[in-house]
Length: 399
Ligand SMILES: Nc1nc2c(c(=O)[nH]1)N[C@H]1C(S)=C(S)[C@@H](COP(=O)(O)O)O[C@H]1N2
Ligand SMILES: [Mo]
Image: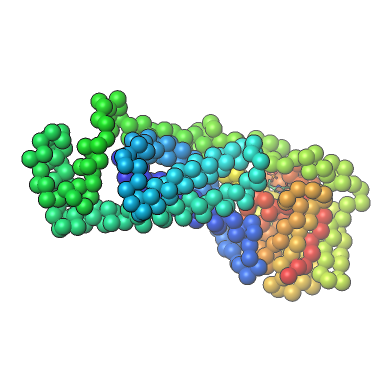
C-alpha cells in the first residue's frame, strides 16, 4: 500500500515540479528564453494541473504517512550510515513536502499567514522536496530493482517465500527457506514483519485504499472546476468561481488596493509608447481610433483559477510598429500602480509579435471595467495572469 501511494505521490510531485518550473520561468524568464504562445490556454492548463495535483497530494501524502508511520519507531533507530542518510532524507522530504503543499494551498486563497515570501520559499522548497525524493529513491533502488526483477540478490524468487511466511502468520519459521532471510528484500521484509507490533487492523487494506482514493477524487472534483470548465458545476472548494465578478470575470487585485482609483479615470490619461527617443502618446480615443481586433483569451492566474474572456483592442504589434520597434524587441509594460509586484513586467518578443496580443479596451462586449484594468490592460496568449498588466501607463522597448 505504501508503494502504491508512493508511486502516485511521486507522480504528483514530479508533475508539480515540472509545471512549477514552467510557471516560474514564465514569470521570471532568463533573457534568452522563448516560450510557446500557442495554444493560448497552455498556461491555464499547466497551472490548473499544478494546483490540482498539489491538492491531490494532501490525501495521498497523509495516507502514505499513515501506512509507514510504524517505521518511525523502528529499532535500532539507525543501522548504518546509509540507513541514517535515508532516514534523514525522509525526515527532510516529509517536512518539506508538508510545508510545500500547505503554503501552496494557502496561497491559492491569497492567505499568507507566515513571515516569509511565498514565491521564493515555494520555489526553493521544491528543490528540497525533489532532492530528498531522489535520495530516497536512490537509497531504495536495490529494493526497487529486486522488486521488478522479482528476485532477491541471491537469484531466488522473492514473493513466494514471503507469502509462505505470511501464511504461517510468522509463527512457523520452519515453513520458510531461511536461506533467503539475510540480506535481500525478503529478509528485510520478514524482519520488519516480525519486529512490528501487529494489532488487529482497524480498517482493512482495501477499505483504507478506497478511503484515500475517494477523498483524492472528491477533493479534485470539488476544486478543479476553478481551472477546468468541465468541472465548473462541482466547484465547491475552489477559492474562485467562474463568472463571478464584474463583467463576469473574477478580480484578483482591485483598483482600490492598487491605488489607481483616480489615476485610472484621469481625463489626461495617455498610454506612452517608447522606443529610445521615439515616443508616442495615445489617449483612449486615439487607441480606439486605431484598427481594433477581437481575441478570445484566458486570464490564467498562478493560483490555479482561469477563465476565458472576449477582449477587444489594439494589437500590441501595431503599437510596436508605431515607434519603429525592431522585430525581436522586448517591451517593458508599466502600470499606473505605484506599488505592488505586478506593476512592471517584461514582455518577450514572441508575445509582442503575436497577433493575439492586445492592449484591451473592451471586455466581453463592454468598456473595460475599472477592476479589470480600465483605461487599458494587456492581454497576451499563454501567459500567467500576473503578466497581464492592468491600468497600463507605458510600453517601452527594452533589452
Ligand atoms: N497592474 C496590475 N496588473 C495586474 C495585477 C496587479 O496586481 N496589478 N494582477 C494580475 C493578476 S495576479 C491576475 S490573475 C490578473 C487578473 O485579472 P482580472 O482582475 O482582470 O481578472 O491581473 C493581473 N494584472
Ligand atoms: Mo494572478
